[in-house]
Length: 124
Image 1 (cartoon, rainbow, N blue to C red):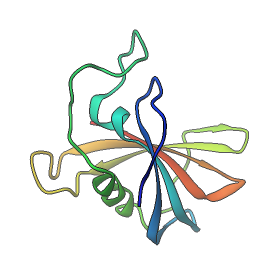
Image 2 (image 1 turned 90 degrees about the vertical axis):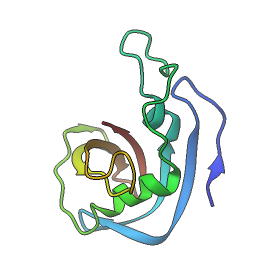
Image 3 (image 1 turned 120 degrees about the vertical axis):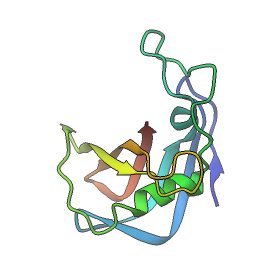
């Protein structure tokens, strides 16, 4: 189950262990760190803080569903910073409801030294 982390300028960060790994670029991802408030509120470009109003109501399970859409994919990173690789992938929303089928940009980082972990955020 998800473990709550302290609040940051980017909001709540949840750690989550997957019951089934997601294969990404040939690596089994078993743990996620999800910036759930960043996903649901977005970040103000000027202040770099969370927006005041929600743009979505995604849960941790919903974000995992987005990531499962990438299972078995080989994806090129958009940026490399040492061992950290940053990815930006367009994914149609797999979650039933208002946003089903709408395209979102899923942004996530992986660490080559810790290949089983991902940090995730998403923007519509």
